[in-house]
Amino acid sequence: MRRRVRVVWPAPRGLTALAAVAALAAAVPARAVDLVRETRGHVAVGYGRLLVDEAPGGSASFGAGVELPLRADLAVGVNVDYHLLGSSTVRRGVLEAQVDYSLFNAAAALHWRPGRSGPLKTLTLLAGAYAAHADLNSAPGGTAFLDVPRDEVAPGGGLALTFFPWRESLLRLGFELAGHVAFLQDDTWTLLSARAAVHY
Image 1: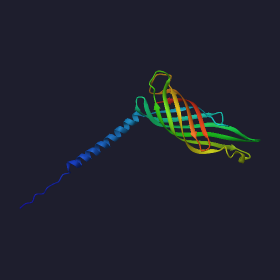
Image 2 (image 1 turned 60 degrees about the horizontal axis):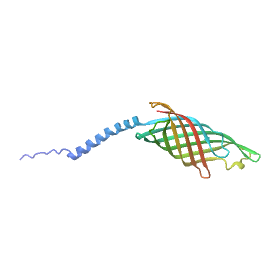
Image 3 (image 1 turned 90 degrees about the vertical axis):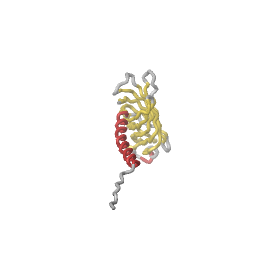
């Protein structure tokens, strides 16, 4: 008596799982492309001023950021800023020291667009990490200036207002006013900046 050989094919459930994995693999690159298309960004350059005792008069401020729209009036992103705040002379009695100030920050950003007429187009809330530096450039009798140097990473936040005086376009030149606060261990650094910003 001849025995029949039975061939067992993959179960329908297995085929469904394979099809789902294949569909997911195809969808992920497509969604990634969509995210890249939706992503916006900006670069900014201008002036920054530190508002603390014995701070310099201010100097160059640079920034860049990317953002992803959540809806028409709301977006999230990341901002990075570097402020070269200049040098100042600190005096202790008859002694003097040159101090160089700078501030770097990387922050999560929430952008809100009021959607009304007028030049104010975006209000941005910032929260992140701030790296504060105050470096002694020259300090004869340096022990008198032990309270001056700073090399500290601290939490902080900020608020930025962006103005676009012209109509909407793919590449827009705007004006940005911002304020930042960094909560150092023994001090609070407050910084104001005014910058030209190109948004794309």
